[in-house]
Amino acid sequence: MHYATTEKKENLIFDLDPEKKDNIDHVLLMYSGGLDTSVLLTWIQDQYEAEVSTFTIDVGQREAHLDQVRDKALKLGAKNAFVVDAKDEFAEDYIAKSIKANGLYQDSYPLSTAIARPLMSKIAVDYAKSEGISAIAHGSTGKGNDQVRFEASIRALNDSITVLAPVREWDMSREMELAYVEEKNIPIPVDSESPYSIDENLWGRSVECGILEDPAEEPPENVHELVSPVEETPDEPEYVELEFKKGVPIQLNDEEMGLVDLIKKLTALAGKHGVGMIDTVEDRIVGLKSREIYECPAATVILKAHEELEKYCSTRHENSFKPLVDQKWAEMIYQGLAFDPLVNDLEAYIEKVNEKVEGNVRLKLFKGSATVVGRSSENGLYSHSLATYDEESTFDQSSSEGFIDIWSLPTKVGFNREKSV
Image (cartoon, rainbow, N blue to C red):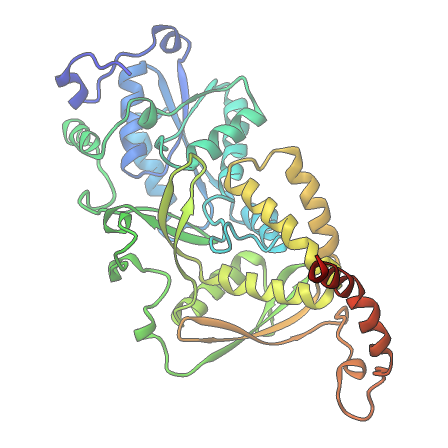
């Protein structure tokens, strides 16, 4: 990294690679309208003397005022401001796969941000190709996961595209960015004093930075938006019922609806009861540990219901093996490798198992918990006549003695050998 002078560093003016600069005349910026990307929209025009088009994708974030984002980009000099509504594609092609895979990273994070990045990358590459743009820029830092997710996906899809990561390449600090905002009179949508970095989509909301960087500190109340504090939740439980078809929920409380609407409605229902708050320290792709706060009410309920129904419809051997597949799938998605051939291989098995995952699951929402209280399916492997202890039982208990003899034989032989040594 080379800064021209201290004064230039403070103004976000850097020495650029002349060859790289000369080869870039039009950049597609992945644009949210927040601080980082608003700075980059102006900065790339200044530093690269290149045209910039912006690309904004709606994946279900509540604050998505896409017309305002588009207008702001154009006012800041964007040649074009592309806005894409991808909520349905996100739900049906990405979230649905995560549901079938019981998608949790390190048994806690429902992959809400991670699962959106390959979709965003795919659509960005498509737009760059259609518009004849040879460079894509993002606002991710060098410490985070998203830089890996964006760039690994873009390179897999089209390795001829140049990827710019100015925040990482030039180590831009928040203070430097705010000074640049003031100098260039760039409007930013939120209070610049807010300490949090936030990402949100249909599947959940992630919050980091500020006081949350101390894993010993309890998250303050102003962190929560989707999930009510337990102290403020209703004093009576609420029951919800989900119907699944081939591993995906299609009905909520006797009302059939598309996955986008179902997730939105369940987010409000579960969040009201304090369900879906996740406070975890996870292993980032780049090797460091990070304290993360997630709010994923619908994901928490749906994943719990799906896992229970899948277990009900699968054999003991399937139930032993599939978690290994699910864990690897979640790791690959988290680590930005959604387009790796192994992901397709894993999904082939996941899809096969989910062909029989159909039926209903009833859950009780109460004081921060979502508890499965009932399940039913025509494909369920539970047999009342075998399981019951009543006299109509069809299970021949006399067979158990011989089974135990055979089952315990290796243990008995091995134990006695060790005892004699």
